Image 1: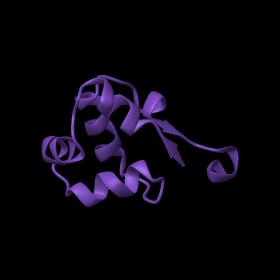
Image 2: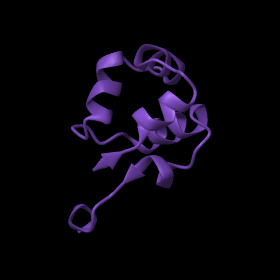
Image 3: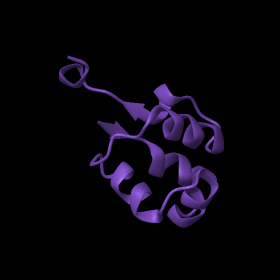
Image 4: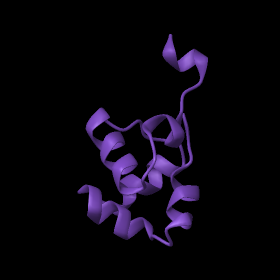
Amino acid sequence: MKTRIKEYRAKYDMTQEELARRVGVRRETVVFLEAGKYNPSLKLACGIAKVLKATVEELFVFEAKELG
């Protein structure tokens, strides 16, 4: 899965630490999300989208093979 979290964070001049704090996770979780190494829960994905004023679809790009 690819994400645009880093791009959206930059838009709001937000650090990984700040995003993590606002959605209730560790900074490392944000690092893994941005690297595409972690698939978030629906609750986390929605929380991140709300903080970054975006939709889940704008932030997370699922590839066809991931959808089964």
